[in-house]
Length: 114
Image (cartoon, rainbow, N blue to C red; front, side, top):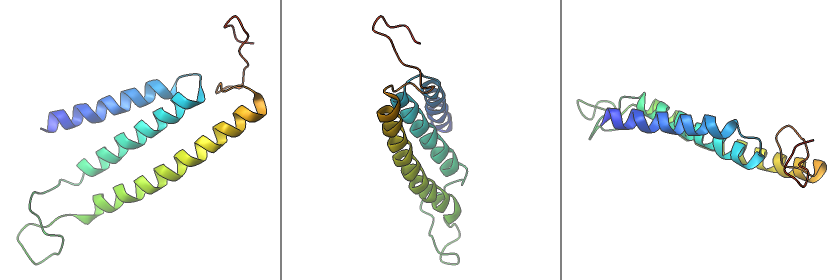
């Protein structure tokens, strides 16, 4: 099960890096979102989750560590805010520059870049 979990985190990371390196803004935004999901899963896995652990210390022999859960919850909120910011920034750049390329170059009608 750990190998499958690690494979999923690695796949999300590789897909995110691949999309971040694209030249259009929408794939870059999706790539950043995938990287954020990969980091969230990594943080969640780093907490050594226990099955049937209670959240209150002293109620049972095993307890759930609340720190990874709090970190992931905070990362989800920050990731959502940053995604909204990057989407608005991309829309503004598209309106100002007339192109959705990351480096701001315009595309000609024959597919070549200026």
